[in-house]
Length: 129
Image 1 (cartoon, helix red, strand yellow):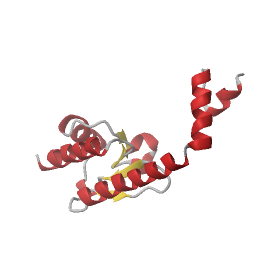
Image 2: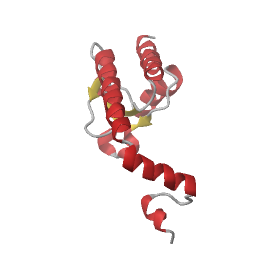
Image 3: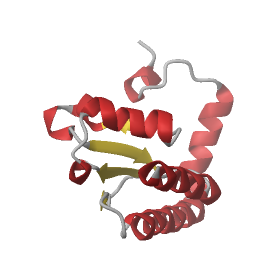
Image 4: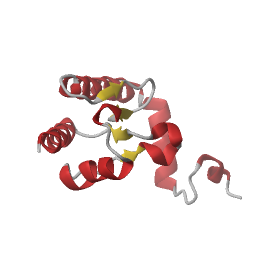
């Protein structure tokens, strides 16, 4: 077994190895900037959802945000329809993570802010309409 397979990397070329080494040796400032950007994205989600019935669970140490839709009292199918067809978003359904995830959706906030803003606007529109 290739040593990199232990880290979830099945086929590693020289460019990937060099990039990984550079990230570990010289990526400190980039990581600091990334963390600040992600924190601002989380604040945007929090501010956007605050006046709605959707509760936002601020993550610690990840860019994946849990959105609690349980107050809407929708079935899993109805929630999936709201997100996929009405809001036209592709979020992870909470029920796929176990029974405790019913009524929740997982949002990847590691994206450019304009993309996140558009997603939140789509969600808002779906909730209103």
